[in-house]
Image (cartoon, rainbow, N blue to C red; front, top):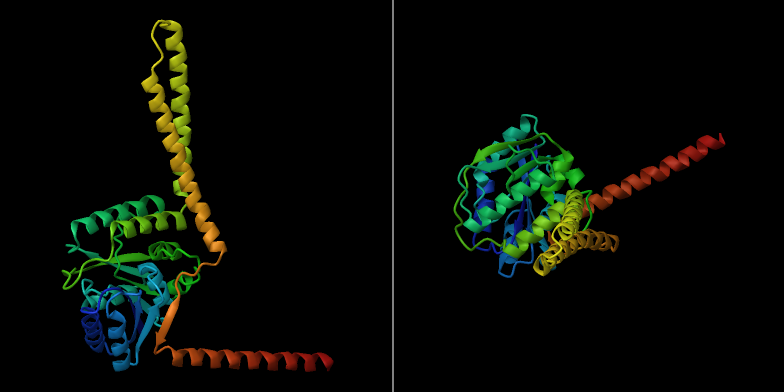
Length: 338
């Protein structure tokens, strides 16, 4: 069985080579499997791409992809998935925190019959901010995308080939890998692995990027926010109607009590804010539809390394298929004349 490792790379010039060597040493101990590694440089500002070039020159089974600008981790994963050829694809981080030497645990779980396997960490070594972001993401996945409560989601996971083929059919501008996996299969399991401390650098996920990821997650694969907005709007309308009835009755029973200016302003501000929030949410959906209709790409590749041979093979195979098709047409015509 062939295993593909897909690694999005950003600010990993000091850690990437160690991750690759760990993959190689781990897979060398599993002679029943062959492997390849797909490294995707998400326009890193450091020398990460040079490290990828050196690794591709050293190992012919490593493929390198260089983005023209920063498109984000999920776009990098999609590019790596599209250029992978393994029966099982394992995605992991470039900073060494996800232990490549425990990839065998994910492969064993896949061989048990599961379609996707996520690594579960007993003790996460992320920062407090990142852990809070993960918890918020976990809640969002459970409420909006229907993720089972007992399922733990992480950036270290393995999926079967048919799941990958379904994932790469998604060509809209805002890919969300977790949503694509949950859409493709429900046969998902967890395995316990260690989580290491970061050896160099810091996480590339800022609050802005995490917020963009959450918005992408619930607008790309769920209409639940619109339904929640509808329910909130209906609730506010009911509250406003009841308050109006209360005001009328109060005016009749206590005519000398002056109308409450502050209460009126509070109601206006509250309902105005809710309307703007719902309009903004609706605008987010419409904007994404507009961008998708304009065929905005998920990513743009500046350079490919060790992919030319594969592309030539694909082109030659396509040529053979077209020749065979032409022969079949001629044969059908001759049979028809007879």
